[in-house]
Image (cartoon, rainbow over all chains, first blue to last red; front, side, top):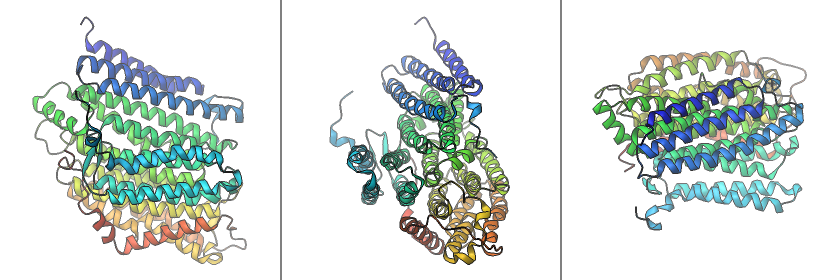
Length: 103
Length: 503
């Protein structure tokens, strides 16, 4: 195999970090959600790479990745619904405007 | 790989949880045929399902069997934990029924969501595989996001929902990243198999230990978010204040029970041998957890003092209690103490469930339709106007402080004992000191109720039949557990999550 495992892991780690940056730095709630998706996709890349290189005969890595995809879809459904509720109340999806509760 | 026969899967030990999950799916459909005026029927069905699962769980209690080819395990630990979350869910439904109608947010889906989340907690306590833990974690969390935002016309509830959702999903991503690293290092997601692989990695001094340490750190971060320990607690007060009050109660007890169950099982079953060098007595993660527990106890109790809203105060109190429970998990890092620590944690969770649900039940009786009535000032004069209610609230506050003869004391006693046994004496000292300190804000409520008087004591708007039942049940349980701790301890018997019970 031409591409060594560490290259995949590096790309995944970079993607994960970009996702974290997106969650922490973006102001738009939809962009924050995209950051979370990026993090989950980084995990999938990791899982598949580990599966291919470490345990190609044991399917648990692939199964895990499939479950992560499904759960990510469920999460997005709920997340977008909540974001729409926020938009209806405040006419904005900027996370900085969501600041009623503090103390 | 051969396909196993259905009989080999040992499905029967997982049936209480499977039953609850399946029934809930049907409840969603049945609910469509129940008229809006009769939504209480949905709640009765949900209560019935929880009762069936509870009895079923008692029947399969303590049979130490694995199911689904080792992905799911039923032992006395998961059995006891199931009891805690089922009791918590039943009391939550009792608290919710009239509250939802009063607040104009009665929707049948609410009860289905409570049940889904409860099923997630049950799977969480029994999960023996990182994949199952992840799915159970999401099954636990996603309904909670929905319920936090269920009063979506109200900006506070919707804000609570989005905050909880973003931080919860963020934490889940950390969990899977950690799980992926552990999978990469060990080549398996099965917890006992991870244990075997970790032993080899530590003995051979392989570089894979880097992945293991990073992976377990990420899992601690993720589950730390879920159970709200410092420094991952920031969402807690906002979410607790904005969410509907019965749900706040449910989140504070159920979410904690599920999160701590998974944390304890991952740490004790999969990673007890994770040491820097082979032969070290204490594990890598013990000190980390101990420091987090100390910070959590200190910060939770200190910040709680300055709160003026009872829901926020109980949120910080729940952070502090997460610290005490985390102390038990840290103690489990010393070989030989894990059984005592497990028992301590379970008893603590049980007593905290009753005490906290009781305290929230009283908050619900005071909360008005417009969301006011939850200030600490609203308790002034309650001792004279409603002596019985005030007496129970005082008792719950004493139990949260950990005064002897209440349930809270038994939990703290066992947890501190385990911590000292594990050699973490400094942690136990911090625990005792912060408990004493916490009396300041718990007793302030009692002072408000009895020693201060007002011409216009708060109106009791929410004291309906079901809320009364929940309050009395919690009160009796706190009293009985406090006076006869042997009852819970006998039931626990040999509750342990050793490897032997898993293979």
